[in-house]
Length: 331
Ligand code: KG4
Ligand code: ZN
Image 1 (cartoon, rainbow, N blue to C red):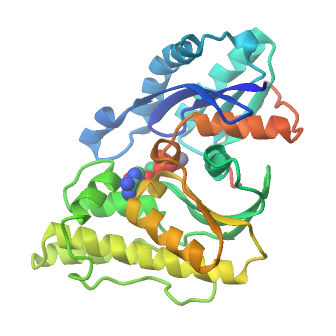
Image 2: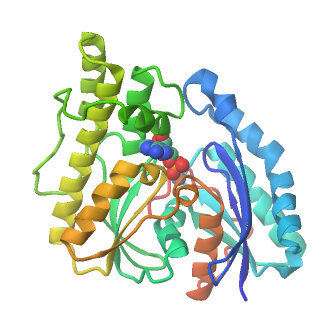
Image 3: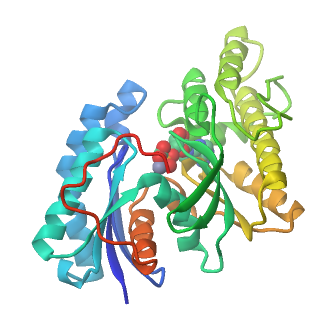
């Protein structure tokens, strides 16, 4: 049985997890830095890096103790090596290098986006390559054709903001604090999704790219007009975002080579309306649909360990111990 220790520290969650090649999450621990960053309305890189440095080692000890295993039982140490906030990524990667060196185990440097991209396969053993993936997080908004481990064809991306960024910025306009996505989703439940006329950027365009900056600006104008309730603005924003996503995804599926399934991943995949809408779209295309459970959507270490297990199973070599962290690293 393959066993991989995974480490995630690219943004504001410090996390460690032990995952087997058979998809069992033996243990996982996560420390959120929400409270530290909330007063600033967003993630402060310096605070994040320090918090990762303080918390990571105890979290790793916790998961090893919980699973009752030692480092020598692991087949590899996998850590996010980018993209992300460089200070945090370095903390996780250096820790993984030290553990790999001390235990003489292979180091697997994982692209955080690959962690998200393969997370639906951790949740769903039946999910086979190639599948279409909507990857929606705080920093990314992409449609990928996931063709195999390490084989990602990027079909579309955002020309300005990521979807999670649009949720967070709109939530901030509505005074919902940070992180805004979950709070905006909650408020939207009390509002009318048709109350506020908001734009649907790029709707109907041939290329399936995304754009959310105009939508966010329209939310600001609607808020400043003081004629709509915050709940109506939230609900209308969410509806407009969903309409864009479904239109763009439909366009991408129409143009894409055949796939076995549609999957969604990343923090925004935790949104129930988006999950529901994509599920409906998948059935229109007679595709199976996979949306990982919520804790596997937002940043976590189980997806990093799983990406490591997938790389091991696919025969990828270990990474060198002098490998550099990559703040920018496209899939
Ligand atoms: O994947 P993730 O945890 O971190 C990145 O890699 O960026 O994604 C975080 C993003 C944030 O923008 C957050 O507001 C958004 O995911 N998010 C949500 C929900 N939960 C998290 N957006 C909408 N609805 C949610 N329920
Ligand atoms: Zn992420």
